[in-house]
Length: 433
Image (cartoon, rainbow, N blue to C red; front, side, top):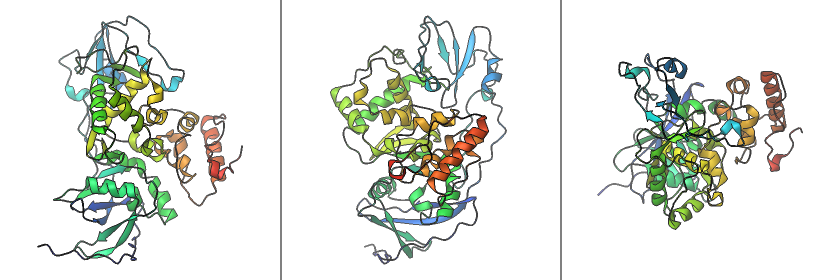
């Protein structure tokens, strides 16, 4: 018989220790447990350094293009892989009204698509993706929605010897995620913003916001948590995985068949989608999930590497297959858009890196956040670097002053006015017009 573990007093909140430097982060060690047991964790301070990159021989797109024989070209997928193509196009590409996020169709029947360079003497190391090199200690980063904080779930923070150090209140969505993610026989190391950042310390919050891109880029993978398993989600994930395996999307917006596929119809914009009624019903309900409508989740997903996953209860799909599937559906000519939330498309099918500040703020203006500062801070990792580098997060700065400084920084960077307004929050409409 197992002895009961000591628990902290319910009224004893966990006391955060200050981080040693701006380069440090907290990690949680989610302790093992059964589904009916309370949530227990340890918190450690770790120095987060950029992983050392071994000398890569990989060529750039332009360099690789120069190595190709006549009649061949190379494109780069949004996952960073190169596809080599030969042949001719029988029709012109199609573009959406927004040229910054256009989806072009590979309309040619005569093209050859391959992952291998047409010259077999070219070293694979010159064009294949190098292995992932996550930061050490290895950890997974959770992308989720805080949700309502009423009736919080209490988690116990323990010391190295198992002694209770205090309690942390968790929102219900986070508590459900941690129960689903924890192992039964070993700990799991995670970065979770609600716990790993002292939310009562504005100075720390501002410092940690600047680490977000490193955290989500250098973790071993991102876990996108969409909530509990319901509404035929496993069936939907299965269908999305099939679509994602058939197509690729390139950095210049091309939708094309994957070199691995044997079904060459999916990339065609005129090819209808033949989902069952059950799948369409699941898709419609799926679009109501809060994750797709929040702002912070945008950059968290964009930073995610190729090992990252989307999880709903026990249902799991590769993030890259998931993203490709929605890029494909968004591209269809006769897509019943009423069945798919526009926020779903915006969150997973677009790739705003490299877009202008005005385009990025406009594209994600409908996304929600609880603090109006985060209309800017929540997108820093994907905003143009020359602009983002001039913004220093400060949660004590009045919101209208933040928006004004953004306008001035953008004007200075571009030497022209590029913002038509600021990302207003109806509850805090004090920004200059």
